[in-house]
Image (cartoon, rainbow, N blue to C red; front, side, top):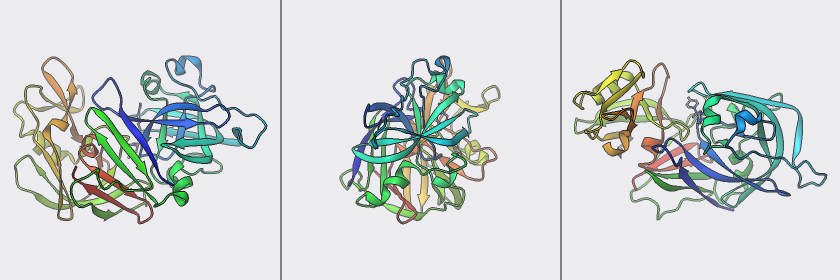
Length: 332
Ligand SMILES: CC1CCN(C(=N)N)CC1
Ligand SMILES: CC1CCN(C(=N)N)CC1
């Protein structure tokens, strides 16, 4: 078994997130556009349990709890509650239902129906749910923790692997169970993943800011499709933006902005001896005013790891190898 699904950048704003059409239900199937997030492990959707005012503009999951084996089933007593790093949150109840992504189906997937969603989810009308693809140890369902869609399907796949091929301002692809050798043009360099924190966490071997020399130093990072930007240690971020005249940390935003007339420098990361290049144009996130632009590289703050978000991932072909607990990067 294999699967292949489109990854659509959020239509309105600078590839803030990438949405995947997910088909939920057998008797009355619904296609719901969800944000595939390798930084969390809950599959949750706006639903008929979400208050109307919070669900306005969204497709809502309507579980068909009919009386056949193919119907949705409420999991009695199960609840979930999650908070994301941008302080958004959601919570609710849990059903089991058929979930098909890119032609690959899980018959009894925990589908977490929202009873409450915070305002930033309500206003993000292109996104009607989160598809968690980190490790199941982070799943918030209680009292019985539930498995991610990938954990449920992986034994049926040709290989316990999936790949991300995100694009800048265009549709990309998530493939499940196979590696499309036509999708990249360098060897894939793998490095081990630690699951101790439940993320796709790995060590990268250093970085290069623009045309400066490569800095060889082992650093921790997670690969996170659910984070838009590239988050690095504040000292590295300061050095990076020092290369752009007038770029500065804007206190009111808590972020670096730079003159939109400038193109930011490239960012290169190392995996062993592999060098992954993020073009400067990918690090121009979007305007905050007529002349100031929001930088695509920002500080990781107090986080113990960097966050390789969409601005970096879209420049690479990325292999999430669950079977071998490793992550792979290739140029494309
Ligand atoms: C470490 C944090 C990264 C951002 N998150 C996420 N993509 N769900 C939350 C966890
Ligand atoms: C993992 C992220 C998904 C998108 N988010 C949001 N719409 N508030 C934040 C959390």
